[in-house]
Image 1 (cartoon, helix red, strand yellow):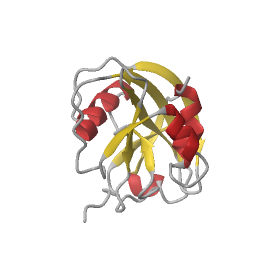
Image 2: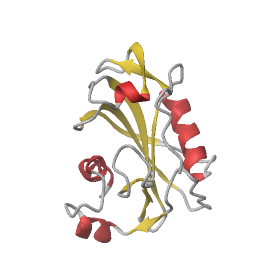
Image 3: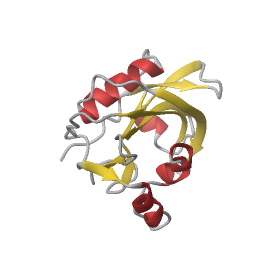
Length: 166
């Protein structure tokens, strides 16, 4: 079974996104509350449905829950835009998309503290979920709203979905 690379190096940032240091994935996810940047992409199709990924059971954060189509960490030395393109390519096999910036906000859980860079896009091409995911599918806005607060989605997705659903 795969596992997250706990020695992977992330930038540590301030609330404005300025890099102030670095730390490993393990350090960032051990309750240290070191603020580190992540990217999220919400992928809609032209029918207004939202693609969600299912997090594999081996993930160290929120295993088995449905989540934002693409979510990933910015690597140390990488820009937010570079991380977004890399993560979308790695997780869904999408290389040609036009991201629209939605928001940047801090998110704190019991284990970590992230500076989340949120984007959305409309995409009707082929989606090929990678081995990093336990598959995915498109959900209607009504279906998503009907499953909120039932433990189906990650808390981060539930807090963010209102930013992208009309």
